[in-house]
Image (cartoon, one colour):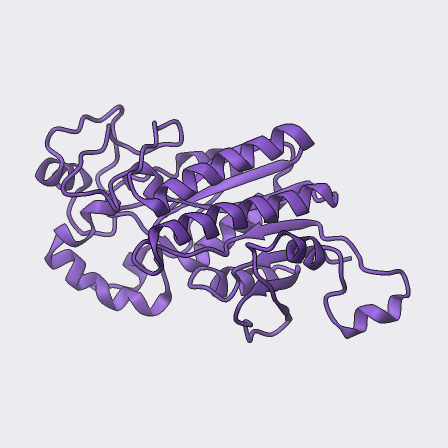
Length: 297
């Protein structure tokens, strides 16, 4: 029997690639969003993550009309993937960004674990490292950026993601569930590789995100690996591709824009500063979509 996945925010930039990846991998995916995702094999339900009652309902009702034929009532979900959120600052007022992101995450995880789901994957963010939406220039504490970093954002979005990581940990501790938080790098859709020559010409464009990126399809692989890896309890994983999104060596980029930031270890010539070593070592991630496949240098 196919595993049943409830995916919030599947219609968003990351979700609309991750969801088809999971469907192709053999999962049944039920998308919870304010806008349906028109994708083969995906069912949709319009619901608001900030309403706790709605989240309990979406996890305890039928996915589609054929489910009625079983006569056994709504079937449980095997995992919940929570990507729904206000995706950055300057879309809604700061307090709304914080409220929606934090309360939405609380509601989704609470409903999931109280209804018996023992695998939840939540979208955190590279913005937790504190520079992306900082006021003025701000140095990172050190390079590379790894999961034990003292995250200290000053903006409403990054702060909401730090709070969400704490929420995830709290529920994992109380219910013995696996709750994995993905600090997702800048998501790149296939058509966006056309922008990379401009990034190469002006490397300052992406300095605030430490030149990180995650191909949307590789993110789908990471979500699949999270679903399949049991028994880790609460975990944080950087979700990023192997290298910087620049054709300038990593050390040169750091020396030019962050000359006062030290390195805690050696890095490969073009190694990403948002390190993906943990997802490679623990989950077995192997990128399939290096930007070099799509961009001529």
